[in-house]
Image 1 (cartoon, rainbow, N blue to C red):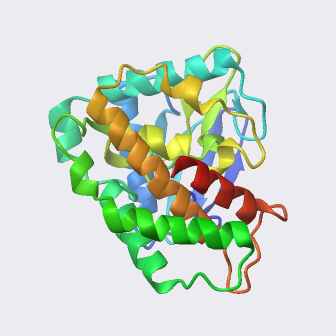
Image 2 (image 1 turned 180 degrees about the horizontal axis):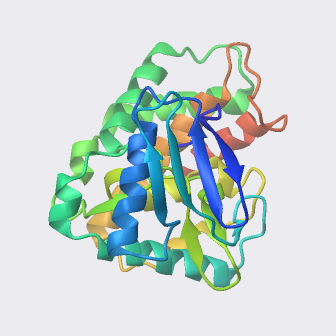
Length: 272
């Protein structure tokens, strides 16, 4: 899940990146360093190598190696790139041992947090005077939430614990024409595979300024029937979350092209 504000500044040299945090009250720098260290140990080459960290400084800094590649966001993501993304994510999900994942703190976003956030937000948001498609999507979302329960897709056969970014923004994935690598681990932590894939599949970045074949991407993973059901639930949930994020106090989109909220409402209705 991507915040609506920047949490850091980057200082670049030819081979090194220093990430200086402008927001760190929620452990962003520690999660970044922990994530880089875990991936460097168990899945080297899938993310920048950690170099140094000043976690107690104000502001905190994390220094890492600089890697090549172009962010997937803002592009027409090709099928080779989608395959490469799936390979990298599968490698990360397999590489970090289960006992290490279990001992890692939960990422900034997780299914329970999103579920609670969406239910609270929609309960407090009147259908109001939005555009008709937005009103329809909000009403449909409330009806769906009245019947849907996270517990129904949270069994052992649906939740496959993994280490993940817990942020589906495809700007976090760099493609060099051969492989995809991960950056921006400030939300990273313990997660589950279905949540990670649903985060990408329902993220605004896959369509507002990019072209991304979600069905083809999800088809690269050997999902259980229960995981697929969990992904379906979480994609609907995240779609509602994004619709809420796009609706400001006066009904206009934030930092996105005009009509983005209406387009997101159409996506919510299609998923529901």
